[in-house]
Image 1 (cartoon, one colour):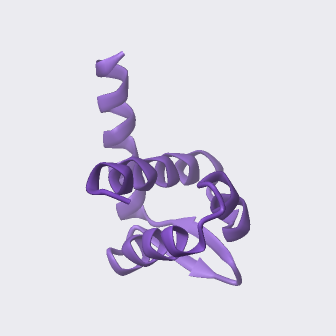
Image 2 (cartoon, one colour; image 1 turned 45 degrees about the vertical axis):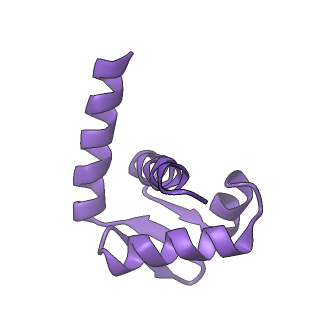
Length: 80
C-alpha cells in the first residue's frame, strides 16, 4: 500500500465506525480486500494513534476518531 491507499482506507474505517459505533474486525478485514498484512497495519495505526480501540476482536471508535471522521465527512461534502 502506498500513502494514498493507506489514507483512503483509514478514512473508510473511521467514517464507517462513526456510523456503526463498533464492528467486528473480520468485517473490516473483508471489506478491505482480505489482506491480513494491510489490515493489521491499518489497525495498528488507528489503535496506536488513539482513534480506535480493539477489544474482543471488535473495533470501536474513540472521541478522537469520531472528531477526525466528522472532519473527513465535512471535507467529502464540500468535494462533491
